[in-house]
Image (cartoon, rainbow, N blue to C red; front, side, top):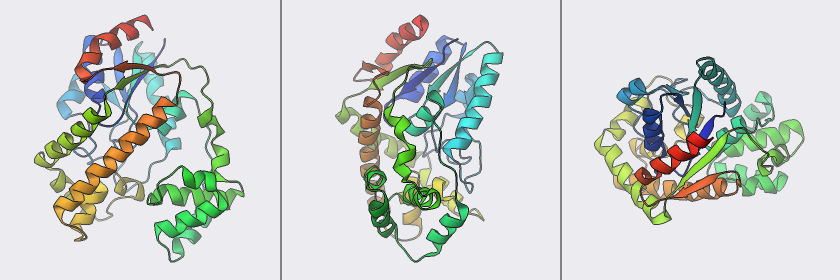
Length: 301
């Protein structure tokens, strides 16, 4: 019994395509591979499947934790193992869908990850700093790790420093498996749209999300007694709208920044997935056109 994964950049339409594939073959159950769809209440901005869609087709690994909780890739892998065992017990197959590349590699290639060092992290966080200062410190200790992340991504920079200082080993030394694309039992398929099309779809999706109440969703999350966890607060769109609600920028500027950052994220996703030679790509100018060829490949797997 072979499971499959459908990947692509953000706004490539992969979630809707996966839903259609599952409609055509009820043996497939959808497993989200999205680091932000695990949070309850973060629905509009993560393009989470609607309640009706989740009722129509089985979806998994959505709404696992509250948004004030941190959630790690290790926890995701444990939840994935439990879900897939349940799917197999029903005689069905898992169709993984999402754009969080590290989460996908974690479950497909069974990656191992460094431990946590709470005392070290607390010490780093207690020092007066901004994220770019931390990034420069990381660059001195582990230039390879620093080159692989945005200087403004506080969550990743802190984690890399925590591991580098706590373990005595460069954070980047724990990741050689990411460069090793071993044979896998999971069928890896990808939807590839022209970059200009993806950029237009990102803009259109933000417009639709705002019309659907994205700002109100973020306002409600910000009003929670415990707010958002560090991980949840870094989600694209949420981060920028939270800054707007704090009075740091006008709404228009915040949205423009979210769009630009999301476009950059899509480019990084594209580069990440293209390094994996195991992914069979389907090139289309509209995701709907990928459904038929994907069905054929899944039937043959």
